Length: 463
Image (cartoon, rainbow, N blue to C red; front, side, top):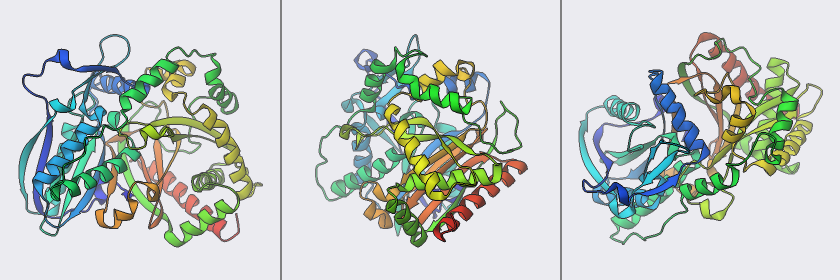
């Protein structure tokens, strides 16, 4: 699996079929289930409302594509997609904000239907990609229903399945969950096997439990102790990137999306083994290297940043689809007199401290500890953000050489520099989205180069 910009997606000429989620015409609203959205979902929804109020023409979505060898069995694929939607409650809901917390109205699995749309022949790869980009940009919106699109580009040699989601229902690991579950359901359906009726743990149940536990938290509650200590050390809740990106605070810019490989598989394996010999996880070793690189080009002696952390530790959420991610701050020293192993140890220590508070929702900390920024629909300025995912650990990743999955985060506009690192069978790569302005391009290129150089120096024993 790889994470790439849409511009890097490969396609072929072919025939596109789509399936759209439909509700029965006679569906009684009184029969819809009612649940409360998560803190992440509510903040995301309110940001979309604010964007509409400001007439901001911005497109955001997260997509996944994967291949089915040979000519696809369309009825079997439709059955697999329907099975997937029926299985995950968050895909059967719409959102409504009346009073109090954001509400989810949920259709039962029996009320879900899929409407097949024959979108026709795409004579060239560019035509196919243009069609997909148009429907993703124009038809996926936080404030409209349904919150995702799905279909297939049929080619005699292989067919490419595509699904695109609004972030309100999805995180990065959920995309890997989707690939695995749809592929397995398709294999069963095409073989004539009856698909099992098995509900997955519902993200909406997770959201309800989170609300019950943390709705009453106040700014001086002990639950926010880690956050308050981070603010005391760093000076602010939001850790600003200590680099000149050439952009104005409070302004959104057209986004540039790029993926580069930092280490091939051989060097990535060697780097992981180095970290392991010193009791360090791969992602913390990579974070340490990023911190050192940032210190080199900025002069910073401490690394202050945000990292997303999975909230799937309970086994009931392992196969679930949803937004199981919390954002946590992390701080550790990166001064030039420290070796890589010393920075790695410092990052490990800091991570052990933050993980004790990982269940406390970032959105709640934002609301209570930085209320001057809470009304904003974006982060207040460019924030230092590091994300890592190991695609080798995703379900049935040993089939990826056949399935060829790609995840695609898309943002038409941004005011920050998000960095998503990932490990796959080819090595370690970086996908980043940042403002498409000359100064930012130069700065981010220098940052990426410094990270690659730092990793190389560590491997050569110069770190």
